[in-house]
Length: 151
Image 1 (spheres, helix red, strand yellow):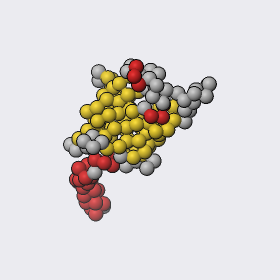
Image 2: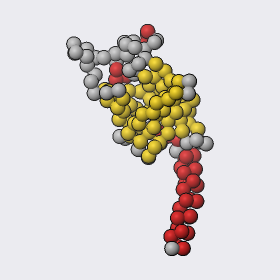
Image 3: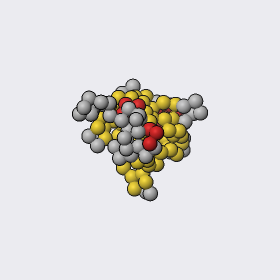
Image 4: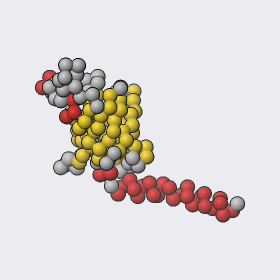
């Protein structure tokens, strides 16, 4: 019983240290391709590192890419009229997201919701090593979705 208690105490003490070491090691671990399901839509999103060290996310594939007439769906709800002709599989969702090693999360950016045509503050963190929690919030009210890392 003592051995078990000691082992449990050791593991509990070690976990924060391991997490802290991992948090500072590789902010680029967010880079990759994710499966995203939201409001009945299914897509793939690429998160990539920009030359300035920030991160962006862009849709690269959409399951229902075409409308009823066979035309590629576009970003018709975008408040920026110059972006309304962007094909649905090329929409930029997040730009210039920054990594925070203290919270082991990425944020200080906006996420664009093409379903509603709205922007919200965004914060991303890993729920598991391959599951990204993406939380958008406006005036303290937020919604979380989860993107599963494919690559």
